[in-house]
Image (cartoon, rainbow, N blue to C red):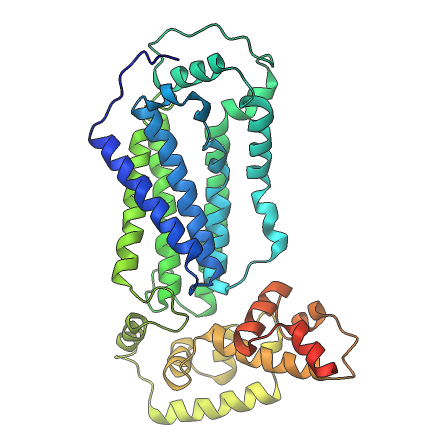
Length: 393
């Protein structure tokens, strides 16, 4: 089909193209880097891939190149329903090093929309796709006759309301993500704006970037008809991608599992004005060891930093300082160490041989089998099932 308009290349087109290249590069970097086998990085790579595909479609439409590739119209539209759940799963994996396979239901809307597009939209004739492009980006041009293989009816409800449905989904997952980060900060007795835990600080920063995308998306859709302002959204997403690139360059040991030099320095500064004395620290450590070995509060799934501090009669801030400086652990690492040791005893016990892995996970304070498996393998180098099997042999 001959294009009625010439290709358009300007500053916006160039900037979008740079965003596509950088997004695809980072996506490959996070997904394929062999020495970085962290689940959270895989999710982040998929997020960046989704963003890069979205920018690519906007780039083709904005530059009029879509006239030459009409079969690609709306090819990235299903990713609208991928960004929000991927971001939520990324934060969960980043904070808790956990992702339960049962949570794949988060991607049900994406799968549904992919099937919907393949059944309803993609089989349509080229004239229909040409008209779809014109209605979104060039409403001033005349439409072609369109003999759709399916009549325009309620079946196009989802496609006609894709922006509204995407916006609603984003809002839901932003709330869920906020609660996820807030609860993690609460367990370490930190404020929402605290920079003490750099992992949680980064998660907060990522959440705010997602909020900024929602805000720009809303402003664009309220001020432009159809998709005429999508290039502005693409520019903003490109800025988010480059912001992430800057963070990676600045934090060259991004993929290390232990605390970075930056994190240690941040913690050191946060404790400079602490009233914790060597006597209080030594006394608290003794009480801590006795409490953990006799009362075993870590067996409860409600075990938290404030609760433990209350048992020891110290402030959560002092307890956090003791764990970081004396034991070189954060609260989650400290709790996992005791829980996994207890789990090893249960797995090796003949009296408990009838128990399932899920039951043992619950007995030592884990709410999900996947979180238990992840922590167990991280600390022992093997899975609970393999550990149990080895003890039987």
